[in-house]
Image (cartoon, rainbow, N blue to C red; front, side):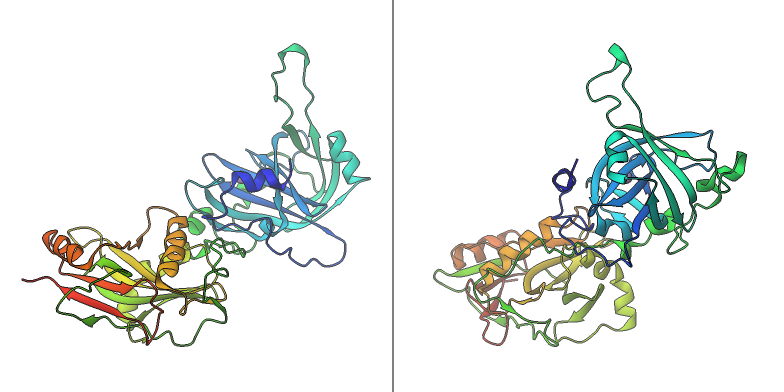
Length: 399
Ligand code: MN
């Protein structure tokens, strides 16, 4: 199994994990890395991974490693993973391949006894580990099929992970190292603590909505000030073609920014929220991390999702910046298409919503919007930039 299988199974568009395209982390010298990730997925297991030839050879070990040479642990061979995955600890959104919580249980280097490629191909891989928790000699031995009882595919994936006899071997309780040392090797946290920390949802370095081809997109850093355009009041809905109309969402207009892994919310004038305001909207800011992007700025309205106002949503209607591209000169219609793509690739169930528009006749839309109980409609030119020259207007419904 190669990386193509891994990449096929995982929809990188909406997951936070690294894809195979992510840059390979630097490694000192020629030592090969190993990592064991405790993975609370449908079933808890330990993913045992050895670096070889630019990928992580991977086995899923339901019970994890034991230090007792008499204990043989089943290790199901699974697809290779990208090297960038070796540093991953955090949450994989539900519904994704491998969805669940990942804890970095051990990390270090491994050294094969003899030719690693030949041993791997022969199903007999012996090696020494030098990790924070595991040390000494181990073996991964492929199980052989047994006559007619063997089903197609059976045993092909079944290996055993065994501790070899040396001074690092233990017996009894002392051998159950996963129970004695359950915590993360890098952060000291438990799997529950990691599961409760939404900040550890890690996004792929390869953005999956590519803004570079949009007309007017300019390669640039995130602007210090975005100057969100204002909606001018209008007594009548606009006439003619070339307008995008939206139902007005009543709420708080906010610009959301994620940069350097940190989300923040700004007022429509670009000012940071008060500490109390920021606390109240912490879950909204946090949800911005679910967007599959490294750096992003969105414009939208925070408003209740339910009649009782207990849950807040963030209704997004514009995208002035995305992953190294200033989109303020891109026609609105194209910005909204990119925004729709981005929001739809975020995991479902969060507070982020894409605010769709209608390209209908203004008067007809206004009449329908008001009949449906909207307070107003907002109208923006389909070719409108995001900035001072934007032609955005709001037409209230008669009370
Ligand atoms: Mn796993």
